[in-house]
Image (cartoon, rainbow, N blue to C red):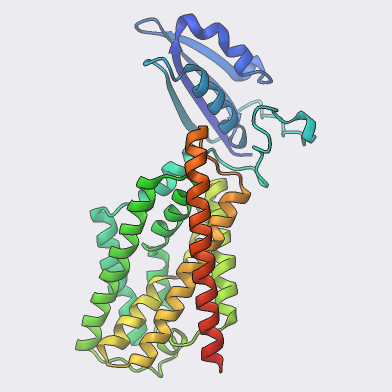
Length: 337
């Protein structure tokens, strides 16, 4: 069971309201300390899947106070161990937030947002990772080295912006949507331009197995991208970062981008279009699958006005991604003929 420590800073005069808000938590998991200027710091040990419901209650009650602060910290272990949560009947769920329970226990909305927001920013680190991984991927494709290509896959700078984009449309976070779209556009264009320049300098051989594999798309690629995108989003919602490495390798975005650029630089336009199709399949399927998992996992905004905006963003995103998925699948059948 993943554990979290919830730290709450509130006025000392409001501490008496906590037992009602934290009902069901044993006193052995809750302690309080007086700090400066009439404030109290309260710490609570929780299972990660319980953080969001209590954090929402506390924020709703105390966010009117300027001194209020809520911090979520990861906890490696605790003794004595926390009891495993018992399955709840539908009637036992909190009536104020019907259906808040996710399909699988997950980390809080705020943790997930913090984890994925960094991947959606066009920072100098992101740009350098795109540049370096593009060089690694192009060398691997030209030398026909699977091991080198896997190295570029593990760096996977383009996966973060797409996960952030799916989360942004789920929460109706326009800032995150704009940031992740910008990072996606810059990352893909930069990798494509660099690979095209390398293709001009070093013409590639399209019969090499690693390049040939990126110049063909079939139904298996669609299924792989959907399953891998879902696995990546599920791993993100439960905080299992180690599982993301497998997703990075399984549904890589950079190798087909680099293959497309190498083919363009070498004047191989038919192969370039096929590699672009594979890139489009992976991009669309990752976003469709990640969006579906975030909805299944009950990732929701905190307030009703944010929820209204999120529903609108979700409708638009679903229409766009389903439409794009239909197009890339239709193109697949055209190619098969």
